[in-house]
Amino acid sequence: MKRLSHACMATLLCLGVSSAQANDNPISNRQALLDGPGTAKQKLRDSGVDLDLRYTNFQQNLSGATDGNGSQNGGRGDLVMNFDGEKLGLWKGFSVNLRHTMVHGQANFNRGFGQNGVLLPYNTAMVFPRENETSLNVTQKFNDTVSISAGKFDMFALSEAAPLQGGSGMDTFTNLGIAAAINGLVSPYTTGVMLNVNTSKALMSFMVYDPRNTQGDNGRPISHTFEDGTSAMANITLPISIAGRMGYHTFNATASDQKHPNLRTGEPVNRRWFGGYSFQQFLQHDADDPSKGWGLFGRIGVTDRNPNFIARHFMLGIGGNNLMQGRKDDMWGVAYAAYDLSHEIVDPTWPTAIRNEQMAEAYYNFAVFPWLRVSPNVQLVRPLDRSRNDEVVLGIRTQLRF
Image (cartoon, rainbow, N blue to C red; front, side, top):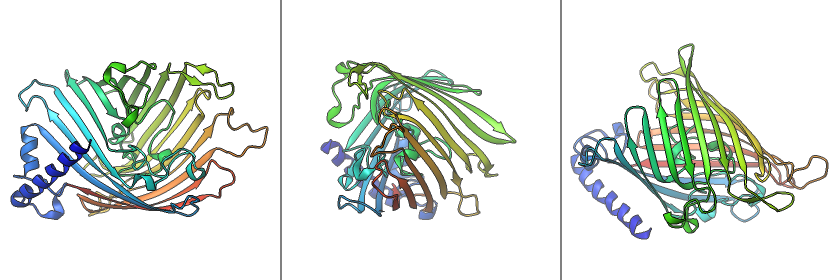
């Protein structure tokens, strides 16, 4: 991993020298600092290698930290490379996706479930990954409708493209309970195979994957994949327009036969399941770019409740792009979420030291330039631990795209 991290830094320096010489675009217009006509990045893209480099820094302050980490700072660099097989002289429809993440200061943040009395960490991007990590998967696109992908997946990265709410803690919301649907059956990094079928009436994905977390030291060679069981997931998204405004309605079903202990008896149980529904509904589109706009989004989900310790969750929010002239690259959002724990853990008939957790968050992502973003945010969290007061978290996220 260290060699790959050093190689990433060397690549960035080389690109910087080349781009400084070749890029005649005004700095304020560039989508990425080192990108533009005639640059090394553009030449790479034309030859079949699309390169994205980002560095994101996080500063957040907790009102009631008890472990000495009231002020938390850290950051991560993300290198994403997409290889186009046809442009590289291989064959049509074949592509490779490589993502390498380098983190620093991650030990400063709430990284464990239950730290500071909170079930879900305040900062998704600084909790996953827990150390420098790489994902790699290959895709074969057969036509405009069907494709198959296989390899090691960064599951948070897969959610980044979702309209209105997507971002996996990097662009929109930071709290894990809002930025990602936690259901207990999907690990942050996993190995598997995914089938995508996209038509004008429905977008469908079906995935069979290893239920283990294949991140860091937990990962084992490909030969051990599925030795602890198998998980499967199906997503069906229906694009539905209401009054000329686009909306997306997604139904999810996930199941696993990996053994987990019964929450009450401790006996192994080899069945877990999750079912969920989510939506994103635009209320206003940009007249010049329909992909931009703002609207409502939300999700609900239920689980088996045992051995899964999360029984159900609910989230509702509003946000998207600021459509004021000159500020259309800005993003904003306000959301609330609640996570109910299994009655095997929280029994309403007897006193308990823990309770269901709730959180609310508001953010504004200010595009100083398209390649430089500053995002202040505030969170209000009612912790899992009943003895803890409501937590106020103030944060600011700064992102550079090279």
